[in-house]
Length: 368
Image (cartoon, rainbow, N blue to C red):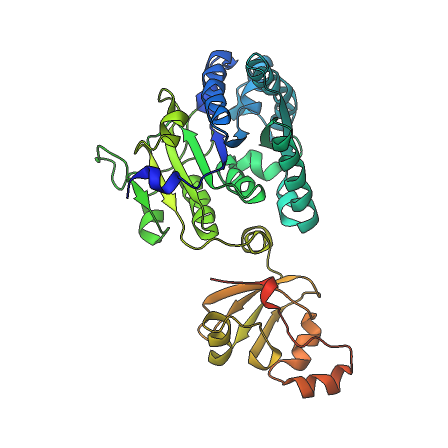
């Protein structure tokens, strides 16, 4: 199918910009940012809503302070991020302002996408900026988050941002042309519809001098996007007018495409919420969830693991231990130990009128 057919429904785009595209030995390159902004403005004028996820803050800070980031401690990197964020935003603002556009900075942490209320607050803010005609520029809050500084993963962050704004397309711009099956291949793979073990095995490792990511983190982002039912393209950001060429339907880079779109709440549940326990269910319950699209009842539960409270997320596994889903429970782990395998009448005798018919409601359940 022509690339233009995949892209015809696209309205909102998240563009992730790797450090290597906007930095040099002197820090942030205003010339490189200017070229990127010119490309982004083309999308905006074509009526696309665009959110940028940009790396580069630590590189900007390290250049100003004349420190090599790889030799810095974690607190020093946090300090460099604090210094570099304002520098990075000043360059972006200057480039967008001269074209008549304003920018707004959003700094996110992992907790912001894990907690439903904060996830929705981030969505409301980003959507408000887009409605105002402002270009949101998102980055991990490196000054307070150790994990992201240690393992630099703005690829995965951009996939979460795509879910927050319900983007139709995520474009990962880096210094690679796409995903390759083999080092000796002349052209990258054109399209991928499933992230299987073979794809994961063929990921290459580390990134550039200024970045810490690699193909592994891009594939992780692709997995989130495919499971959400949306699209992602890995492309070389050093290619002239790369964004323009992508939206015009040119077969460039590697396209990742999912089939079934998940609703917003189920995306959040699938990718952002950590499971606190595990429920093993029998074959009848597996069929009810997967084929009949039913809620999970206590009668189908054979085992309860972990310690969790009402409202926590738990994994759901079959009798072979295969994960088949994830959901928000209406009971604590102690309560479920008492009612597993029991029908509604038996549960009513235990809890009286204060009971839920469903352990996990269908609306709070994601089935893989």
